[in-house]
Image 1 (cartoon, one colour):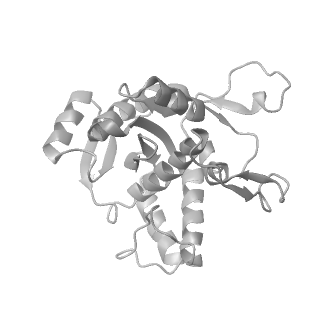
Image 2 (cartoon, one colour; image 1 turned 60 degrees about the horizontal axis):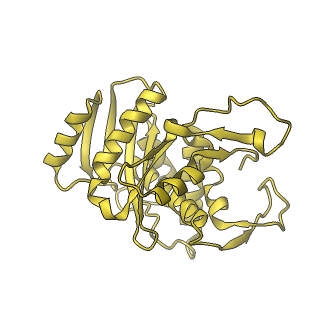
Length: 257
């Protein structure tokens, strides 16, 4: 894993900002371009955006599915949660998070860090914050996600993880059929947020499951994420911190999607 790509997802109604720090191999940009071309998309013009409505575009829905597979097969990521009231701190908090993820996961450095536009008040502020962390990396703030396509992966992860968190906070309750090849009865109803997050959950940085096996298929199929993949900002209220920990502190891995 040679690069980190960072993007955020802002949710005013829920009161939080969630950032994704996606670690990916050097050739991830070429892989994304390859997926675009395979789906008839022009890499010079097209940019994946989670905020876009692709419901009437089968080729774009297919592209999104393949992006998820790309993350599942080749990437790892960490999640950063902070309150909406401190949105201007998102860049600084992400740098602190990356330093934590590098340390806990023993990621070899040097690396490169690419951050989306708007995470800092200015490029000078970004460089100053980066210098303060002491991370051994090449740092590229204020990047255009249309050109640095790995940021599009971070966009997808940040949006999907945000939906999962909002569901756990009781703000989303939409149900969908599990469908074929889901690992569940096709007619079972599951939360939309779980279905969206299902394949991505395996790629979150984690500490594994070192607890003694209990024989309970649910308890034994949970991995501890902890500091390996979750950074909760010091600015979070106790309620938001607890919600983030409940959603991402441990992840159920019982069924492969």
